[in-house]
Image (cartoon, rainbow over all chains, first blue to last red; front, side):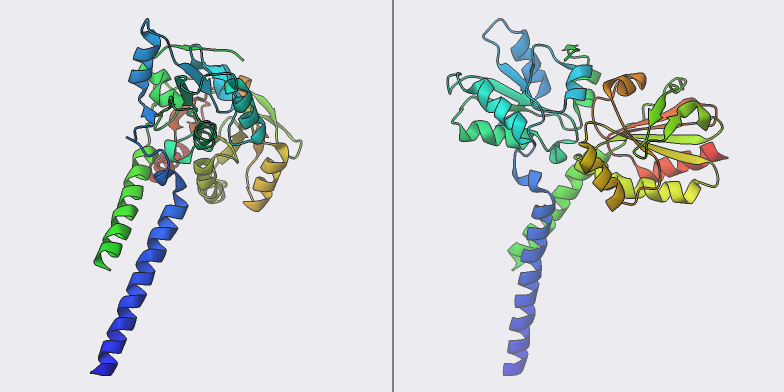
Length: 161
Length: 167
């Protein structure tokens, strides 16, 4: 009897360990799932941003933190090029760009280079502004890509470096 | 323990659903326009004249080594190239904004069996604009673009389309 209980406890312990390892591995494989998940309050949807840009009120500053080839082909009208925030040079550009801004400035970050969960740029850029104490930062949610979620919807873009 | 298992299952399915959402292929096959004729140079310095592939089925993949989902597709492109080379499939990778060293390291690590060239905005625009990675195009033996796969491709469907075009 004692032996059976011992085996059961061991069995349950292994199940628990397996479950914890499983959760850890899944979470590790999708780091994005825990940062800026779809629907979180830090995000702004494309149609909301469009409305904000078209309104007569003070417009947010839109900063593009993705690769240049994408920006050169099409970007949100008025968006400023910062560079892919996965590299330190671009993060430096971002720091310099916002250095003189009030900490409550309305800033929208966007990339759209790749599917949302896998974008290597948007989270480092967001973290950087959070770290620097900016309180009015939103991240444009582009679930698939800039092409699919902005351009294909007919929202206004401009070309150029 | 039940809670832990429940959490594990929920996290797994939650992640899977999100991935599925973004891996959904949006086949925007339209008027089957002529593929652009480009002269490219691969990582080995070899000139690639895309018009020389006339009569073959060509799969063009815009990607980048820094783009995680792009990297996930590469082994499948390698497998397709292996499987259908003799029947006339040619895969070409066009890397966007990769550092040269990172691209070469990636090419070696994955033992890529098809030519890879460093892309440019000009090449992207020749294909009607590449506004997200990965993006792939399937070109028929007649040199016309038969399918576009923005985002991660559905490889089951892609392979079926390759087989149909190779016939």
